[in-house]
Image (cartoon, rainbow, N blue to C red):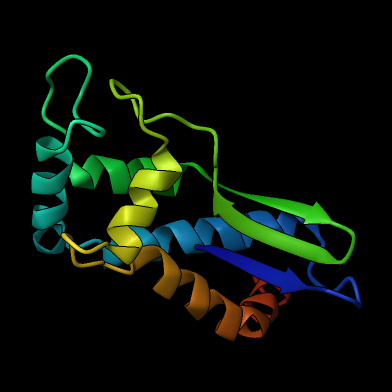
Length: 141
């Protein structure tokens, strides 16, 4: 559940461009968010003790996804750029890692059908990255 870009020509390493992509990615995720597809995930989180709130608070799958969106970050290492959800962030009032909760929503398991909101968005940006680069270069003209 991450977007990895190999940039041998250093075309995409401009930090301003990466922030632009991150913003567009978050906008797309918000626009794709369908609360109806998250109902089963909510039931799952509130039924199984691993995800139950420490404070007996109801866990909203929508809040999990929004937290995941807000915690997407990118890292540049050599000629590789990786966009992913922060892997150490803990979801508030639980002991569960936010990344793991988002991964469960995205991929599902034997008891929960996946809602691939993150992987479909990452795939979309991998496929259309050059178009976003052109949009970025030609902005304001």
